[in-house]
Image 1 (cartoon, rainbow, N blue to C red):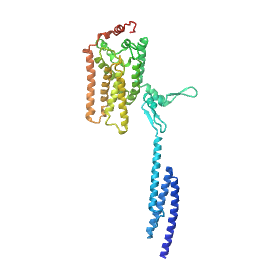
Image 2 (cartoon, rainbow, N blue to C red):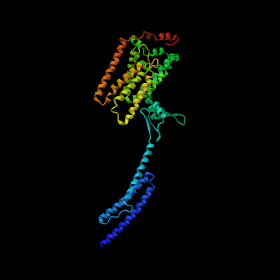
Image 3 (cartoon, rainbow, N blue to C red):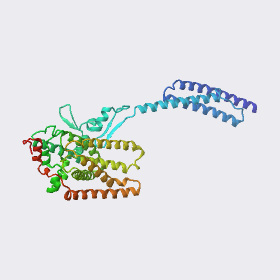
Image 4 (tube, rainbow, N blue to C red):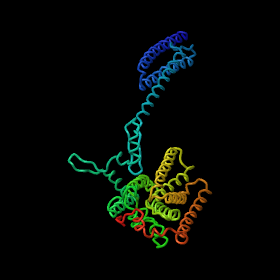
Length: 424
């Protein structure tokens, strides 16, 4: 009776194993035939797992009953080969899917003032888009107001708010004043001066002196100290104005957002003031105009901030840090390239850069990791600023001896060009 029961149990297990093998083979074949996509591979893996589970369960039952083990018709090695092949196909399909996702990744260009420009999935920014976004992102992201089908103009609320914030920044307001001052100077000059007298395409030097150009003789002999500030609002011509305003509006606005209007204003005015002091000392016998000294101060402070935060920059921001460093040096070189143009002096550029660097260390020196650098650098630069200002003003007031011809710029200029009709 016991032998009969064992034979019956063995027969049942054989039939179950055969049935399971038939079902498993059919399911595996169907799954492998459809394994060209990720979903089919996943189904095939699930089917294969079920087949292995059936086989293991049968073997466990046989061990529990003390019967000889019944092996799967496919064989363990063959089943393992099937599983390995299915896993390989699944990994390949996953890699293809990841590649498709990478190709469809959406890139975004972001500006702290104007917002984001999202490109189409898989699209790379063209050189035109990069240049446009770098110089004038408002044109790439979109205008504040668009024309409706009815012929009216409708303003996008968010873009309109960005435009308003942009216009109300100190950088833009100063740029508007500088444009207005150039227009006034040209009007007082009865037009543009000849290019041989002013290659920057602007007014006569006599008019710029009348409006407040840096004149060391008038500062030293007649105490017109306000001339250390007014040159920031004047420019020699359209070329000079365009370069300075472009840097001021593009870079200055971003830094004004980043630093805040108070810090930005302090750096701008202090750098412009100290640059005029160095210009009076180094070039006492020439006139000078332009906001280049103040702009160089802004760039110098930005460079100082990058250096102060160098060791504390997160790894994901290293690329941005390098790009900012290149941008700073590029703008400094562009500004310095105008140092040899008449009425644009190199001394103001150097003075503004030094003043901006020291201001930047004083304001951003807390970003140094080392306590010695954090405190020592700020003390040294603050002392340097005070010495720069006090020593410079004392030098102008006591020992500086500029040419007295600058007290009568109009007369001297008319005699130099032999033209009594030049406006003064």
